[in-house]
Length: 335
Image 1 (cartoon, rainbow, N blue to C red):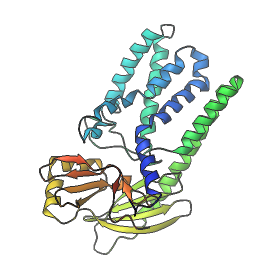
Image 2: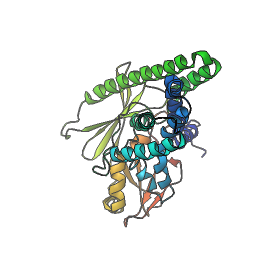
Image 3: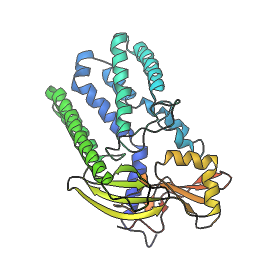
Image 4: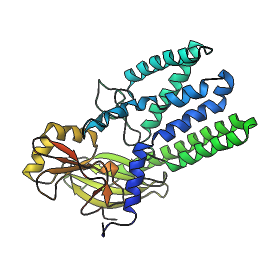
């Protein structure tokens, strides 16, 4: 701990908290939708329906206690298109029974809005959603914002507070908050598109195969992204400032350390599953030389370089354990 940069611990805490309290964003969106005019139009039950259904797809968090790979079930069966339809029907029947004064059509529309809004909000960040599960295991992500965005919290939270303080104009404050979030999201989309353009324009080393490009939003707004160009055996990692049209090369990393134990761990069923989850996995031999270590560049940041969550110890036979959170990288990403 003595050599840990002071800013590494806050980032690890922020990211860990983001994973656990992402529902704050969903709840604020649901309340904003309700107070923007729907509760005034449909009456009692509207706010409750939207607040609950805006969080309902996260019932798959119940898988987390089931082993170190339980998190791989997050954003799967309750976030995919077939699962979403089933959730809408189940929630509609439940809330129609709870609020009989609301028509079936109204409850169906409100539950659909809440659940669809949740899935769309989860598509914003790099964690991704298995939208076509069980037909496809590919995670779909837009890579527009970091998993927790304080600007979105501030906009929605302040608009909700203003709506509570000035009841006569609550619908206008709520609509204004949602419009500001939409505008902010548009800014993030522009920044993401520009960052991808800048990343794809980077020169390819002589003799290297055409790389695949990955883009990850950094914390604290759309002004900074990380880009990763993946070649056959290594990554080129960049820091991108889209509004300044500036790109800085950070480092090159081998995808896999050349070691028989690492190779065996990566070939195991567990290794293949983790490879598919991490779009840009890095495989290394653990310090004790007994197992392989794997982590994803999508959860690493130049702003807070020393520590990374979601790090796993994988044995050659596929036995897997979570590394101590947050894992201290050695060496950290070079600024």
